[in-house]
Length: 409
Ligand code: ADP
Ligand code: ASP
Ligand code: MG
Image (cartoon, rainbow, N blue to C red):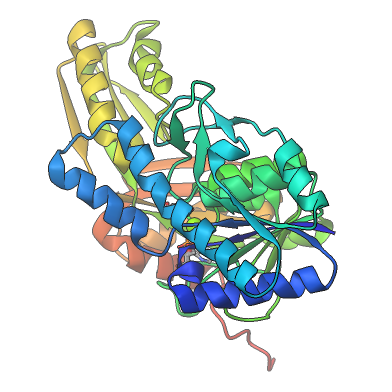
């Protein structure tokens, strides 16, 4: 089989852990598999590098930021390759530009456009284990880009898709995808199987165990993904196409996202074309707007509130303030002290009353809901950030997800 594996930051946090990873990779090689191994930077390294840049200035240039943070993965890919070679295995480390992984020019959140596979295939055909620096790419002009935080998952799935690999294994510090973040809900259970669609909703609702774009790519190219632990042999979570069993589950997970911020525009002229003027420039910068609420007012104007990733708040706010002035809006406000809690499950499609149960549960715990959005299989509520953990635990319990499963009946 051709397998693409990805090892996250905690899995390659020091030389001892890298040695363990090399041993696991070697075992697969001994079984006769072809391997492409994607690595993240050592745990904490990306944050450390970013904080150096922000120590110099609050607004470092995105191009240079990418050049800086891409070094984290350069280090681990070289170290893993050296470790494999030291253990007697032929290995070759490749950086994004050497493959090359072509992306657009949206520095710090670039999107992959094309991955020629010649160089990878050549190495594989020579029996080498290919070790790839995750998270990074190159523009056609030759500038280094990165794919956004958590982007090594996307590198792995994109390579699996480009190479038509049989499997993409995501090795991380938990045993799989859980019904809620195990760091917050000690009662969370491992989910054995999930559909691409459910995983997409879980990821977009904040379950950062897998990057959203990785799931999108896996869904489009039908790449089977196995999320599992670097530190155990236990089977993890298989992400694949939906089957009948999956539909029976009403709510498969509860998630939270603290990485959003709210922008509100008050007194916007209620005319055709205004929304386009506001959201056009934001979209052009590649900033993802999540929830949008518009409310009419008796004076014929409207108030508009929406959320963006917290890391892009400064940039989005600047754009919105410019537009607000042009269109004559009354004022612009923003807040970072929000979080979004969501429930996700394929069974919601065919069952009523899930959303109302969520609202009831939050109300019972005195949590006020600021914004609501729904999709076919997800309900999300924006709440005050300080109630995040309380809300997640309450919902996890209310929807019967707490373990241990009641065996005696
Ligand atoms: P890596 O460095 O391996 O990419 P991440 O930190 O990005 O690891 O992702 C793994 C983390 O995701 C876990 O440690 C866990 O705290 C968090 N997480 C959030 N939601 C979930 C969930 N529903 N299931 C499993 N892990 C989750
Ligand atoms: N090192 C990058 C980050 O910390 C990419 C990744 O780990 O997936 O976001
Ligand atoms: Mg990650």
